[in-house]
Amino acid sequence: MQKIINYQPQPMNRLLLGTLPLLVVLVVYLVASDARLAANSADKLLPGFNAMGDAIMRMAFTPSPRTGEYLLWADTCASLARLLMGTALSALLALVFGLFCGALPVVRAFLSPLITVIALVPPLAILPILFICFGLGELAKVVLIIIGITPFIVRDLQLHVMSIPEEQLVKAQTLGGHSGQILWRVVLPQLLPRLMDSVRLSLSSAWLFLIAAEAISATDGLGYRIFLMRRYMAMDVILPYVAWITLLAFALDFALRFINRRCFPWYYAK
Image (cartoon, rainbow, N blue to C red; front, side, top):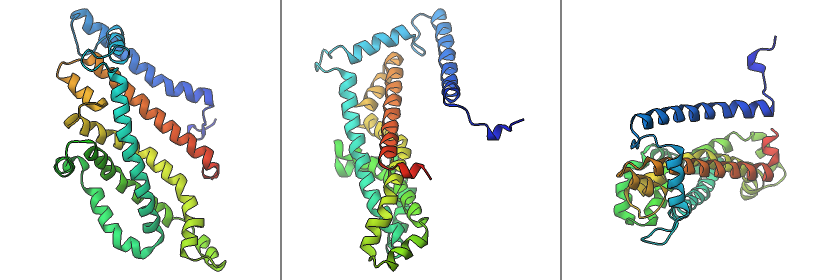
């Protein structure tokens, strides 16, 4: 009899197993919502799908009477612009620091303690400082994302570089490669796919910092809208917004994984 630890589900079985918990959550919500609405038709805590559908139509396909914008799409564009800018800058900074800290012991000895200290500071605790230093505009929100996820990516890349077999570096030096060539031709190609994976893993934290910043100081964005609707207990708007953020996060994760597999197939063949 095959041990369960050795069982590898087929693709179709894996899909069914992954879908089952989601269906259970959906059924539980529907049952709880029907029970609450049967007891009180004006209940706002667990709105029915009809109410959420009406809210989606109102937010996504009906222009705002005040601004004329389609609020869901305007909020999505604002949040994605902040998220992508912060994540892209974080990836660039992390690549530079991770490469040099991992490959050059003198740089590691100089910068690693500072990076460790920054990584241990709760980013949300310094959010008021960022608003004081950079104002209440877009810059503070982007900087919060950078401070929040860059140290994690740097430390992950540094460890990955340090795990590269020393034999590769010795062979490169034997063939006459100087430090710059070794960094560019040996270390960097092995670091890029790891960078993509690290960015993927840090996206959830980036979303957290973005939503927190938008909730405190913003006039648009997905986080701003959620916390604005909280004042009116508009769960028919909040829940679709949360589901939309989850869908966007899944799409970004899938896109990064797809790009990584297409650009660096050898990384996944290990």
